[in-house]
Length: 159
Image (cartoon, rainbow, N blue to C red; front, side):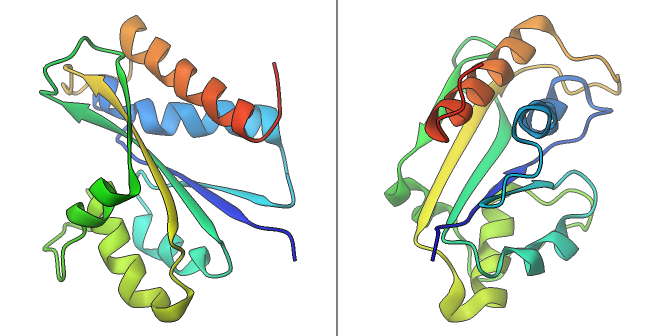
């Protein structure tokens, strides 16, 4: 059986740079189309129903913004699996329209039980502007483009 990967983009596209995770998955959708072994999910405002769709995936990749990272806007961080595991909470308190990546993994672990995949990567893109604004800054967008290129490379799709 071919390995199946779920890519989840987090963020709020009407909060300026916070929408960078959604921007990344939009770029991936344009390039990947309907790839049989890759599922792309928008975790912006309908996160909980998406978590049920993760069953059957052997790998999860999450993309989100991170504020106050101490690095330049657009900087990209890839968290190791050990760091991801340390972020998962047993029973996080969440608001349905503001689920963060580590909260999503917490709920996915409970919902999927034994089907929860061990192979998880998290890409975080440094931002600073989260004001109500549909525009994203060029530096955040450049960070999003870098993550999209890294993921396309991982799946052997070169632009």
